[in-house]
Amino acid sequence: MRQLPHRAAPVAVAVLLLAGCATDVVRGEASPLAGAPVDVTAEEFPITGVGDAPIDQFARNALADLEQFWTQAYPEYFGEQYTPLAGGYFSVDSSDLDESLYPDSGIGCDGSYTAPEDVAGNAFYDPVCDVIAYDREMLQELSDDYGRFLVPVVMAHEFGHAMQGRFGFAESGRSIQDETQADCLAGAWTRWVADGGAQHLSLREPELDDVVRGFLLLRDDVGSDPDDSEAHGSYFDRVSAFYDGFDTGLATCRDAFGVDRLFTAAEFTEPDFINQGNAEFDDIVEWVGATLPAFFGEVFPVASGAEFRAPAIEGFQVRAPDCDGLDDRDLGYCPAERTVYIDEADLAVPAYDEIGDFALATAMALPYALAVREQAGLSVDDGEATRSAVCLTGWYQAQWYTNSFADLLPAEISPGDIDEAVQFLLQYGVDDQVFPNVDASGFELVGAFRTGFLDGGEACGLDR
Image (tube, rainbow, N blue to C red; front, side):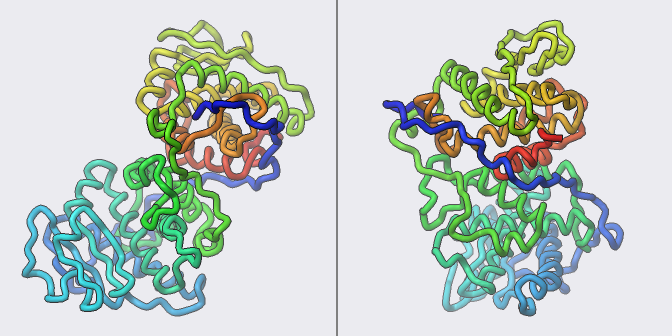
C-alpha cells in the first residue's frame, strides 16, 4: 500500500459487488477416461530437433493432447474446423545446442527466421510461420522447481496463442489481453485433462497448487507498465484468467477478454518503486484495523439484517491465548472474548517480511471474516467456514482496489498488493497452524479469494 501525501476526497465505503454470482471452486479429477495415459510416439507426433530426454516426451504428450482438445473444441466455440499448425513444432536444448538438427530456415520459416540459440530460456508461438518452439532445458527447470504439470500449462498457453492466430488477436493491440486470454484457454484445457479427457496426460489435484505457484515466476515484474508491448499481467491477472478457463470454460475465454476486462497490473509511482509498494508494518496494522470494521459494519446489516459488533484484533508472541477457537494456532477467532488473535512472531512478521504488506493485511482479514461468520450464526471451524472467510477477504480487499476507503485513510493500494494476498494463501493458507483440518487445497483457497474479489458478498455465503 502507499501512503498519500494528502487525504483523498471523501468516498463512502461502498457496498460494492454485493450482487455477484456465486461460483463453486471445483477440484480436478486425476483419472483419464480411457485408462492410464500412454506416450505418443515420435512417428505419430514429430517435433523438429527433439531429443530423447523425458521432458521432450512430456512436451510431446501435452502437444498431442492439445491438438486433440482443439480439434474437438474449436468448431464448437469458434465455428470453424481446427487447422493443425502449418509450421509444426521445434525443440531446442540450450545447454547442448546442435544446429545441424534444424533446417536452413532455422526455427520457423523463411518469412520469420529465428536462430536456434535465440530460443534459449523461452517458449513461444510465431504467428507468421504458425510454429510453436520451446527450450527443453527451460521446461526441465520449470518442472524441477514448480512441478511437472507447469510444463503442459506452458505448452497450452502457447497453443492458445496459436488459436488466437486463427480466431484473432485483441483488436486493441494490448499484449496483456492476448496473454491472459491464452492463460484462460490453458485453464480450459487443464480442466479437460483433470476431467479425464486426455489420452497422454493425467493431472493429480496437488499439481494444481504447483501450477498456480508457477504463475508467480511467469508474471510481469511488479510495477511494470501493463500497456507494454510484451505485458503478460500481474500474478492475480494471470491466475484469475487461468481460473476463468478452468471454472467456466472456453465460452468465457472467448467472450470475457475485451477492452473492459479488469487488470490489476499497474506501474509504480516513484515512491512505490523505492519501497516496492510496501508500507510500514505498524501502518498496515492501523489501516487494516480501521477498514475491517468500517467495511463489515456497512455490509453486514445488508447481508444479515443485524448490526455488526466489531471484534478486537490483538497480536501475541508464539503461544496463543488459551481460548476455544484458537487451539494454539497462528491465527484465529476467540468467540468468548470476541477477539481476533494473530501470532506476530511466527506469522505476521514473517509474512510481511517474506511476501509484503498485503500478506499481513490478508492474515488479519481471514480470522476477522470468521468473526463476521460467527455473528451471522454460521460455522467457523469447518471447510465451508474457511472457504467463506477467504472469499470474504477477497471481497474486503476489492474495496482497497476500488479506493473505497479514501474517506477513512490517507492510503491506497499499490501494484502487487493483490498478488501478495494470493501468495499468502498458497504459502500459509494450507498450513494447519492457520486453518486446521481443512480439506481445501491452495488452488481452492485462491479460487475462493478470486471469487470474493470479483463477484462479491453473495458468492461468499454470508447471507445463508
